Image 1 (tube, rainbow, N blue to C red):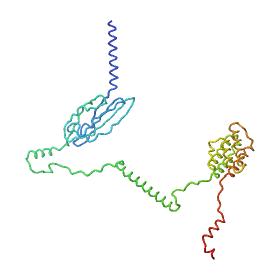
Image 2: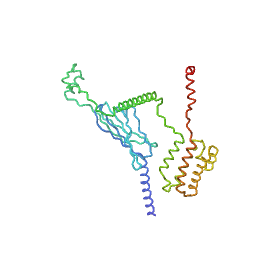
Image 3: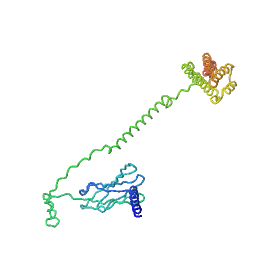
Length: 349
C-alpha cells in the first residue's frame, strides 16, 4: 500500500510539471530593456518590450500619448518587429523617449494584453544627468544665486562659443518625393506629346489609327487554300488533317459569303442549303465531291488516291471562284451621261 501511494504521488508530481510546462508554453512573456540606460538632459533613449508568445495570440501594447511616468516623455512609438519560428512569435515593440529633468527614474512594470490576460514586464531604471560644469563656474553660479554679486562676468563663467551649425547627413529617401514628381512630369509630357501626335495624324489622314484591312471572304479563303496547298500534308499520310482543314476553310467561307451556318451543319445540310443558292450545277457538284470524300476519310477511315486529293483541292478553288462576290465596275455609258449633264452649255453649243 505504501508503495502504491508513493507511485501515485510521483504520477501527480509528473502531471503537475507537464501541465505547468504546457500552460507556461501557452502564456506570453515580456521583458523590458532601455538603451542607453543613462542619458543627458534632452537626449533620447529607446525602451524595448520583447514579447515571446504562441503565434496565434494577438498582443496589445500600451499606448502613451505623453509620458510613461512623470518626467519621461514619449516621442514616438515605433512599429513592432515580428519573427515566427516553430509556432513561437517574437515581438519587439519600441518607445522612443526623452527627459528634461536630471534624476534617477524608476519605471515600474509595463503591461501588455494577449487577448485574455494582462502580463507585466520587469521594472527598470533610467538615469538622466545634467552637463558637467567646471568648478569655477559652479562657484560663480552659487554666488549669483546667493546675491553676492549683481553682475555677470562671462570670463568667470567660462562659457564656450556657439558651435557652428552641423549639416544633417544626406539621406536619399528624404528626397524620394522629388523623384516621383520628376516621373509624373515626364509621364505628363509624354501624354501631351502623344495627344499632339494623334491630332496631327488625324488631320493628315482623317483617323487616329490605321484601320485594319478588311479583305473579301473569297480572298481570305483563297489565301488559306494556298497555304494548305503549299504544305502538302496529304503526301505525308495526314489525309484526315488535310480534309478537316479543307472543309473548315470552305465552311467558314460559306458562312461569310452566304450567311449559312455551315460550321454547325452536317455535310448533307450544307449541300441542301447550297442547292437553293447555287447558280449552276457545277457549284453543287464540286462541293459535294469534297464533302463526301472528307466524310469517308474522317468517319470511315477511307484512304483516298493521290489524284482524289488533288481533285478535292482543285474543286475547292473552283467552288470559291464560282461563288465569290463580283466587283461592280462603273458603267461607261452612265459616266458619259453624267459628264454631259454636268455641262449643259456644251450641249447647247
